Image 1 (cartoon, rainbow, N blue to C red):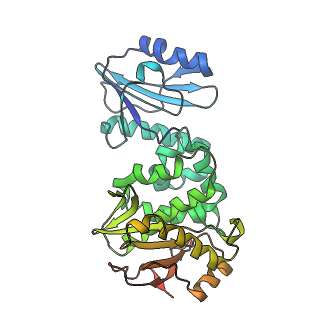
Image 2 (image 1 turned 135 degrees about the vertical axis):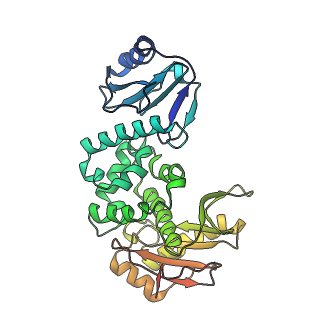
Image 3 (image 1 turned 60 degrees about the vertical axis):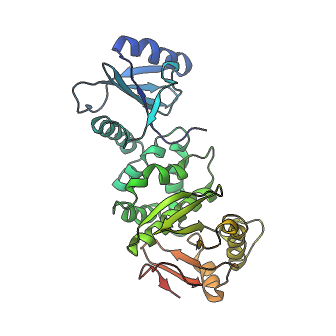
Length: 331
């Protein structure tokens, strides 16, 4: 399964003729392809650049100078580039990275202007919005599921994450966080909602002024979702009862989902804080959870629900090792 978009870096010398023979020709044979001028200049006059457009909607970007070239695309990689190193937008030279991101953003502006209106969301998720796996599923998730809010418009859902991402708090972890959303072979709305739960918790930690690192590998073989000043945090998100095959009541859904974590990651890391995100619950479903405030057999546990306007409320079992301040309205 393909991952988020990255550059392939070639340390060989390329010419227009070689591009046509070794890159365009095999793609034309497989999909039908044409070589076109880029929409933007690279910004480093040592580089020549081109777009490769396939009849099936795939594309690739290629820029090259003597002794160095960069390829990025959501299509089949031609054989001459198979054994090349990969680089993220942050690792590639600034001029090359900026050029590619301008090209990709312009594509989003043409195909999905409603999405491009949200500048930071578009920028942050570019590695998956234009990837081989995620280009359809990720856009569909934001369009049809409002990024996980059950009773919101797509614009309200996008505005919520635009507000979070525009702070820059996740910029350094862009590939780690974005790739979780966009590397599924199919449209798995439950998994995507669970991914956005991690963004929701990141927002809480940021609002509380806490320093954190996502996706922290442990010697147990588990990767917990966050480390907050050395304290571990695991995040989970129950599916709303209407979508569950077993627990058909919101309280049971919380207990079942929390229990699954207790017997897995938390069994190996019992001092971790558990955050259960009920953002997928409708008002009546959350009211039932809020009223009963069920525990899940682990402390500390935070059970919360976010709204598109940024308001978050929840309850706590046990004592957190860090202070969330006013990030949550405790009920």
